Image (cartoon, rainbow, N blue to C red; front, side):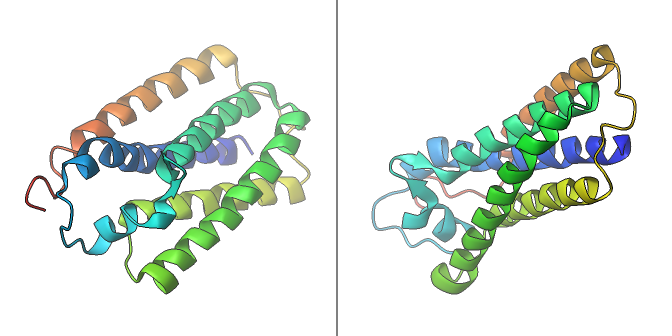
Amino acid sequence: MNRLIIGFIVVAMLGWVASVILTAIHFWTIPLIPDGATLRGPMLVITSQWAYIGPVPLATIGAVYYIAMIAFGALWLSTKNPVVERILLPITGIGFVASLGFVYLQLGVIGAICPFCMMSAGATTILFGIELYIKFRGGASQLPSVEASRVWPTVFAATMLLTILAMWSLTVLPLPVGGA
């Protein structure tokens, strides 16, 4: 079970990376695209009307979701508190259902795919699957927890390094700038 919870944290970190990259694109690339530019593929998805709730990019909401999943995963691993499991299951379930809707929008309505959006959808699906598996195996609380002094510094450092990687990736991604 500890390996599954560690896997949960790692998958949440991968979802975090995808969401941070998309959020950065929303804040730093999209404003530079000229009005009337012809967009294709991922940029068509990222700039669609369905990519926002009001003025807030869905990617930003996803980033908040994933950072919460990382924190809850670390708390779960270090405490094995069954309340954490009961909190996580409906949250990951809602995330899974939302991801199904977002994948439908990409494939059925927009007609384009955003790889980072699909990475996020995959991460959410795996998080929900891990949650269900652990629940139906009797929960993780029967096993000893991992010492918090080992969990939190590792999770913090890995999250920070992945955030730096996400920001660096913006320098090498083929993003439209200026002339789109």
